[in-house]
Length: 475
Image (spheres, rainbow, N blue to C red):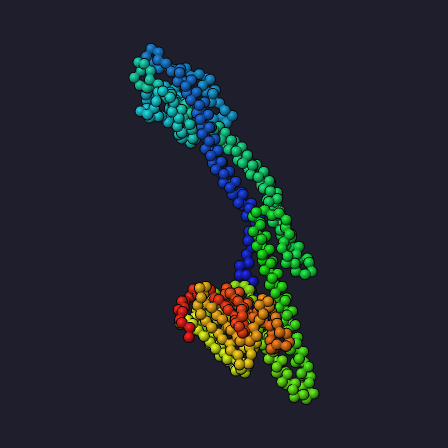
């Protein structure tokens, strides 16, 4: 059954160019809106103050003509006072002069002020509704000698000119802001293109690898990069290096495996041909070749599991004592047939816990014991020993065979390394390579040294975080 492994979320993300454009435009638009709001407040205040000054001038000119003659209040309305209020919008002008509650001249229905709050020193300005229109009124109080009631002078005008002036100034401000934003937009696009050019060049370099015949996993040659792109380039080069290492290992593994499998397969073909001719010995050769091929495939799979990359499952507590006894049960028949005494020594009370994967630990120890038996002498001894040390748990596998010379021990850990060649016991040369791969994956250390006689393989596991061990005396 084929399963779909595509990502569940297939939505297109917002492009980097659009993100940058939004990130640059939002800080520009918000100040523009604030500037428009502040400009509207300032324009309204300036227009109000300017027109109030003209309206106050007309009020003062009229109020100066108010006099007392022979006990009566008189005035002379100057035409210049009303001329000051003429404008292109032809606003209506209203006035009212009253002595106390008695109208002297003007519009009687003009909203009257509250005399108790009206000053005689400076004019007061207020808005009001008059004849279905909004008007601005300037008014002042005058106290004349020999007149008991105060004189109230009022001059008012409609607001068409004020509103027209405000609209004109606000329109000019908004046009200026829109022009400024438009210029910024025109300049931002090429600026973004220039800023993102290194990213486009990096993409071109990466895409250029697709046109080559063989996969090119060498580091990218991008030249100088901005500081923001250096981590991306460095991470990509590290990914290429890991991929190159993985593919190289896969090619080497495939080549070595095919080379190693060619021999038993060739033997099988020859012996099958002899068996067809009635050779009785051919069946024995076929069985031995099949056993070698099975062992090779088993070890290749174990090596592949030890080398597999990607996200691995979390470590779990593994009891080395239990694994050791299981390996002995697996290899005891082989040891009997080889006339090798297989022993187990544990210097730790209770479970010997380490962090790892049981299958890998079992495969590692099984290969160590197999080598200790295979490369031992008849009547020899192979020993598994567990003990504590300053850095963790020490696992040793010792044999009484010929051992490995110190100069060849590093080479013995290579894959398909056969130090004795065809003259030695049959094998694949993968046992110690599997041990090395497993110890690296589990974070353990591996050491080969002389057992005088024989070989001692020591593996030290780091202290377990899942349990404690207690040391006991050697028996």
